[in-house]
Image 1 (cartoon, rainbow, N blue to C red):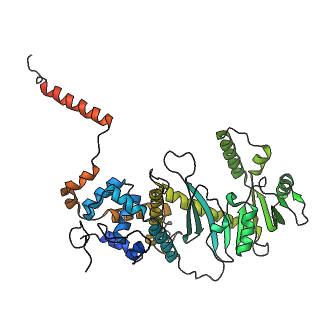
Image 2 (tube, one colour):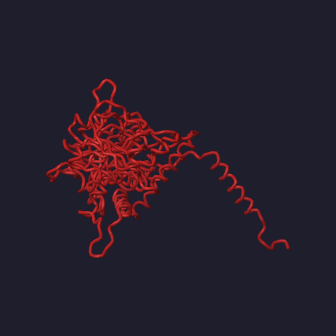
Image 3 (cartoon, one colour):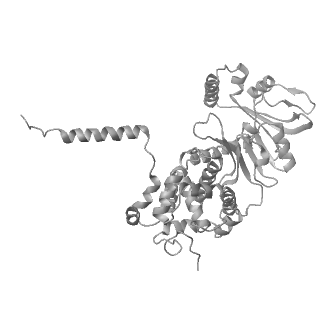
Amino acid sequence: MCRQPKGARGECNRLEEDGAWEELRSRLPADLDERARHNGALRRVRKIRDGEQLLRLILLYTTCTLSLREAAAWAWRALQLRLTADALNYRFSCAVLFLRTLVLDVMRQRVGPQDRSGPALRILDATGLNEPGSEGTDWRLHVTYTPGEGAVGLELTDAHGGEHLDRGVGQPGDVFLLDRGYGHAREVRTARAQGVECVVRIHLQNLPLQDRQGHRLTPAALLKRADAGLVDQPVQIPEAKHAPVEARLVMTPLPREKAALARRKLRKAAVKKGRRPQALTLKLAGYFCCVTTVAAERLPATTLLTWYKIRWQVELWFKRSKSLLRLDHLTKASPVLVAIQIWGRLLVALLLQRLWPRPLDVHPIAGKPPISAWRLTRIHWLDIVLAVYGGTPLASRLTNTEALDQLREHPRKKRTWADTLIAEAERDLGAMQPLGAGI
């Protein structure tokens, strides 16, 4: 028999006809209550009785984009929980660790033990998240992504959390695809130290290279060689206070259309900053240049260039998460509440992948086109929102007008002015003679 918290109604606030939430709840760990207590999210049982109820309120706040006051009104109408916005603020502020560990555990359970006998292909990248009114990056989300599986590693930092390979999640022997943000000698050295392989796109102007004899490889000389054919040679990357790092350079010209597009983007970005790109910078924009720790015998250059095209999958994951799951639509709040918004939406992203048909039909079968991951994400996001927002039947909510007191606020000056004008107009209309009177 469950304990009846103070202020609760009915038998432990159990709702009838809430099957959608129960179905969604079945895809989460069973020990939510124990997790919430262990991580300090629930210290004393009052109106929020357990971890499941707390998580549902968090998901409502993050997925339905409600304010704390609106979430409190919903909790009263749908769950018969008489909460205030301040009470929710306190509960959510204590639940960051609970929510973060839950997201990471759900991600690990979804990935599960790898059944592959060889190394895995990993993509490590980061994206910036901005709060309203911000002129720069406020938060940075670091994601390790495995093609065909999804996100297998998540780390949230502030704007000072740089992009580094040691934030990646993988096993020795795995191959990491990295963009230019990781194009530093430190990342190649980290790959060597951790026993993983990496393929890192670089800026030749930012990363000095030398041959095995220690002679500097200038960008101009490498461009001349790349124009004659594919460049594939061993190099060394010098680093201050460290021995040079052994690597392999692969460089090739981009197709004419892609090279022209890259140069247009470079000029546009320079104009925004009031700068003029150098001729060498524009020239280099038309080439693909990367360094890797994988030997040519194990990974030919043509295969490497094909593999690197897969790196775009993580960009599509970022785009779906931001555009459809509102990952970057943060509301202005305290840092802990913003962290709740981010981790809550990341949990939704993981739940979405649990709702997907497995295996996902990404290839045409029997003449049918593949399923669109974009449209499937939109549909399942709506499924989750409806499951979270469920609760008591609509008829019961409409009769609970007392819960709407949570939405009352002091009228603003413009609103008061408008109400006064409307009242004066109605009074004047009442004093007017009927149409045709006195004629």
